[in-house]
Length: 221
Image (tube, rainbow, N blue to C red; front, side, top):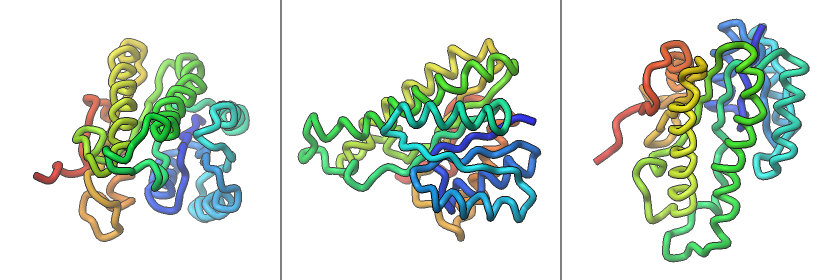
């Protein structure tokens, strides 16, 4: 049995994707800073007969993230699918004219150093399996810079570039890197951007392995 590792576990999209991949037979590794939240999520998944375990880590602490992913693989089995989708902090979203060089340190660590650390932690196991999927989830500022949220616009663009390079470099090894852009808010009543709809979409991307960038719905004009 292989493992679906979710960096940025939460009760919305994270729980829905964990449930979807768990229903397909994968063990689930949930990674978040909040141990109490992880306990609640694993208990919720256990009620659906999903084998899940939580691992505490902060994506801004690359050592803790690396340790969590290695512990997940040791405990649950090799990681075949990695989803990187932590929610950015509110202070990353300053207007561009209020953004200093120092204020970009945390967003870039969150959206570049975090993904690079996570990928480097799981890549050897994927290569040993002979397959793997790397899923990156971003908002619309990754592809359409928004001057009202300069930190995430800059950092998500850098994450997008990294993910795209992985897509090209790893394709010959049967490791598929893909990005899902969610243009608006994730809402339970949204047809294409509800947690369950997005979870289905991410699972389809993993299964179909078709192209790099995907959109949950078209970008608004």
